[in-house]
Every structure is written in structure tokens, then in C-alpha cells.
Length: 625
Image (cartoon, rainbow, N blue to C red):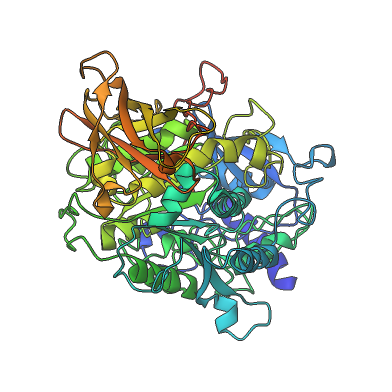
């Protein structure tokens, strides 16, 4: 307590004389801009900082907790009166947007027991899924957390689950597999609670939908879905200790400087928390993030210094072939297989590599784009069709960030990678975060009423595209597969029946918000496969355009076939439909059941655009992704 009191007095003195010194000097020009540690005992405030685009980097360099939203042209900061005074002394215009008064306690009444799942519950969930679905799911312990490696009783093993129709050798920690892999990870930033809830629902959707939903069944038959629901379990466990007022711990619990960095207090915030930002610690383009020990984006003493990040990188190396040369200018081949998503909150964004390059203006160019920019951008816009999120490269929407997980996945392995920022920055509904303290802990009901309905289609799209994400993203999408069987109810297995298969082939299925939305191409062909998909040597059956000619970006396609009735008397037969555009690009397959009671695959529809003020910015910036 004495140390903190003296530091608080010293901070006030430094404000008066205008001297600010960093505690660690990795990058001297940046570190000397950092604000000194502050006491977390004073009232929590939401600060609105009036800032020009040219001053964003200067604000970030102070090390304050800049949130993922704008209020018109302003950035929002979590802080207290001392931090507000320090920023004003630096020349920033600062206003108090909201106080965390008891009347507006944004953390109550939601508790972990009644809503958000604890780390222990996530671990038990994985065990329950594997026990209940032994032919579909397998758990892998892929490493240990920092506290576990230090011999602390509250440390954690790092857990992943693999979901597929298991054959001998499936879900092995080896990149040599004939099944494409889709990797989804959540909660690398501990306080972002919605992300683990989305991972939980994705796991359940896969195992519960197998044998029921044709699309999920086809996917689980042919692909491996890997899920890490809590990538930073030590940090998440610390968040949980806040109960109804979760501690906003972002980093892991590496004890860098516990005598100076703050411990959690009644306000639920660490203004200058101990630990390492795992999403700045990756061993790719590391070294341009926070440099002082207590900063929210402190990147660590060296690249991949943290056991959580080391284990995560090794896990992905075990799952995916290295398909890209080490040169920044080398593109991964169009036949690259594998895709990953890392879930964050908030701001309703889909962003993709490069994150480490700076862009000038509103769009990046060839000097600061990833070599596979076209493929990555198309992959991202295919997903944002479902959730309506703004889509682009980080510097096009936000700012540059190095040492991030998605940059590592693409930069080191060449796989398609992206980040979702789940949850709106607008306060247009109960799930919005602007002008509240619930940015990272929105009402738990939002998980099922908003976030999961918007994102499950995006996850499914990413998993289907993982077979060859750069190639398949360029091709059309199949929606609304319908099977009609002309047969009487008393048909026998020795009869033949006539079936009509109809679907919608669309190349215009892209999100509408973002930078450089890909152009749609006319459909040129479509085909259907019975039982065996194209990658297993199935025989294609050509489909016709409903109006007699392929010439638009959206076409009804159909075919009529005479087949053995025995195929329609069982629930085990699948059909697969795909389409091609006039550039020659084939899209992913969509699956449907071939059975006497036709089941139509629902056509996805874009989510409604939330109403926002006319002067609200089109792209909502995420400052700490």
C-alpha cells in the first residue's frame, strides 16, 4: 500500500512538471510516451477523447485502456480522474462520458453461475461432449498455462477438442491428413466473454446436428473442426473472481512486476495490469506493441515468450502444413488447405492479415497487403454475409497491430486466417456497448438472441471453405437445396423413381459493409453428386439454368434424374451441389438429404442492419483486438 501511495503522489508531481517516463525501454520513442501506473481505487470512468487520426498512435503509446468503439469522431478510454488529468496534460481533449455509479452498474446482475461459464465449466463441457459422442469428438491437451508451469495450484492445462467422424488416425497431432481442418479459438483476451460462449455453441451445434442436419453431417464426415474455447484460462479465471463485476483482465497472469502493476479491486478494473498480451506475443512481426510491463498491450520480453502462445503455435504447426514461403511477398498457393478464426469482442468486424502493416488513406495497396489479399478478402466477405460485420484489413478499418495470432497463422503457415470482433459498438439495442461498461460482458441473453444467430452461418462457411479457402471463396455459393421425389408412399425398393433437385447458385453472397467488397461474377455451370462428393471421386450430374441460360450472378439450377428407389428409403444418403462462375472458379458444396420426406436447406438471409445515428462512423474502430 505504501508503494502504491508513493507512486500515486509521484504521478501527480510528474503531471505538474510534464515529465512522463516509461518503466521499461524496448522502443524508446514509444515507451517514453507511456503513462505511469495508476491506482485502481478511484471511481471507474468512461472517458471520451477528442482525437484526430494522426494522433491515434500517440494515444495508444500512452498505454491507457482504449476501448473498441468510437463516439462519432472520438475514442473511448476506461480510466479514472487521474488518467483523465494525465491525458489532458498531454494535450488531449477529454470529457467524462459515463461514471460507473451504483445506479448503472453494468456488471450486475449477471453472474457466472447463472450465465457465463467458468473455465472449469468449459473444461467439463469438453469432457462431456467427448464422453457423449465418442465417435465424433476427441480432447487434446496441447500445453500448460504460465501459472501451471510455475507449479501454481490454480494453473490450467490448455485444452482443445477435435470434432469429426472419427476414423483410425483422425485428430492426430500431425499435419499429414486427408481431411481439411478448420481451427476456431476464443478468449485469448480473458475479459472478452462472448467469444467462449460462441465456441461452446459451435461445438454443440456440430455434435448435436450430426445425422440430423445435412450440411453439418457432410462437414463432420469429411473435415476436422478443432476448437480452443479458452486460450487464456489463467486470465479468464481471474476475470471470474469479480463475480457480478468481472475483473477486466486482458492479459495472461505472467507475474512481470506485481509490486507495481495493479491487482484487481472493487472497481472491477486493472488500469495497469500485470501479465502479457498474448495477442501481441506471437512469433511473427513481433515487437511493435506495448513495451512497458503494466501496459494493456505489453508484448512480452521476446516473441512467443509465453507458454500459452508457444503451445498455441505448436498446436497449429501440428495441424497445418507450412504452405507459404517465409518472404513477406510470397503468396500461399491457390490450393492451400486450412483455415482459422480467432474470436474477440467487440465492434462487429471481420478483419484479416496483414495486421502489422500501416496503410495510408482508406485502403491498403500492394505494398502493405498480404500476398494473398484477394483470397483473404474474399474469404472474409463470404463470412460477413452472415453476420453483417464490417470487413477489411486492420489498417483499413482500425490501426496496425503486430504479433497477432491471425497474422502468425497466415504468415507462418499460409492458411486463411481472420479475426471476428463479436458484439456491436452501438447502443441501439440491449446488446450494444457504446456508453456502457458492458463492452466485454454484455447481457448473457445476447449470446442466444443476437450473437449466435448472426455467427453460426459464418462459422459454417469458414469450415466449408477450409478445404481450399482461397480457391473455393472465389466460387459461387449454393443455397436452398430442394429435393422432390415423384413416388407414391407404398413404393418398393425394386422400383425406380424420378427426383428433381433444385438449388440457388449465387456469386453475390458477400457482406455489404467494408473495404473493397469483391465483385460478383455470372454463374456458368452447376452440378450435383449423389452419395460421393467430388473430392471422393463422385460422378457429376450437370444441372441446367432454370431460365435456360447461365448469364447472371444468381441462378436457379435444377436437374431431373431417374434413380433406384432404394436410395430414397433411407436417411443415410446425401447429395452435394456446387456451382462455377465464368472465371472458372468452383465454390464449396452444399449438402441435402436424399429421402422421401424432402428437407430443404434454408437459404441464409443477411442480418438486419442496426439503426445508428446518421453521423455515426461507418467503420467502428477496435483499438485493442
